[in-house]
Image (cartoon, rainbow, N blue to C red):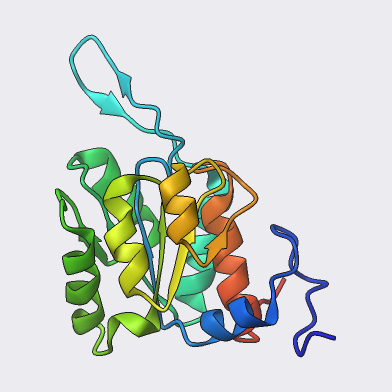
Length: 182
């Protein structure tokens, strides 16, 4: 029997005790953007402006983390106003954009929040994210991630990137820390 009631966990199947233990130690949740907070689609208008679509449930999950006192940061190779605007709207204070070395980004983010990478989670979807997944305490992949990413991750979401995967991780962290309140 699980030490934590999983009846509240609406966004994913009940996690194992091992995953709950890893999630209980997370102080900072780090997310990739393309393919994680978006479904990876980029809309390009005639004026060459790019638009991204973010899922509202994922945004709510990030707000839930922030309100519960868990730090939220983004590490993305993408640069652009859409990413920064969405981060600002959600209250995400630390965005490392134009980031090509995700493991280095994890170390920098962890240092900014005055702890080590083992106190972080990272949710990714592609090969560039593997190094980050391997250095954090809880490395996670979205359901439609590259197969090599899934094989490196300790936990995989049920939802695809940009379709509720970030909300799943948020609820997992909150559940493991007894902070999931509806």
